Length: 242
Image (cartoon, rainbow, N blue to C red; front, side, top):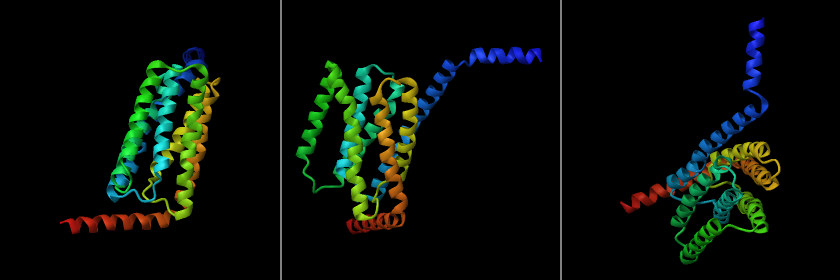
């Protein structure tokens, strides 16, 4: 009994609340970083497989990408550790790939304004990261993703409701987005309880991802039919090209 008491005492000293908190946060951050590497890959696969971006909203893709990167800039300029926002870097890069694919499979869209806009955003990003921002502008930068990223999902949600299907959207990014944002709310509360923006960003994003998940369930059968038609058109076009 004495040995057990000694061991329990040692365990309490080793795993005190502060150390346990750090361990939990680190584990969750690592899980989120790993999950973010896979988040958008199913969407990229769906687009390549169908050879189409049917059902996708360009406004959603572009604004979500910008929102992810703005949240990264806010965290970098605020001096937060990479593990507390790293998933946004990876998701932002994957969103860039999806946007390029969207433009590739949408030849009717004018390219010049899109290329020019991309170049302007790149130059502005470099300037912000190098020169920094005053406190008021930094707060605005942190709040922008709440409206831009979540507002970006509204056109896609409305489009899904209008067309009664989710097109080539993949359910995996929506599920991982909901799960990841929910976990990020917890880690933000544990790591940065005084920063309301760091908490509100993932919280509002989790709510919007949840709405998209509900739409996947509502329009599952119709979406499956649309995806099959898109694949059939791709195969027919390939045979004609031969």
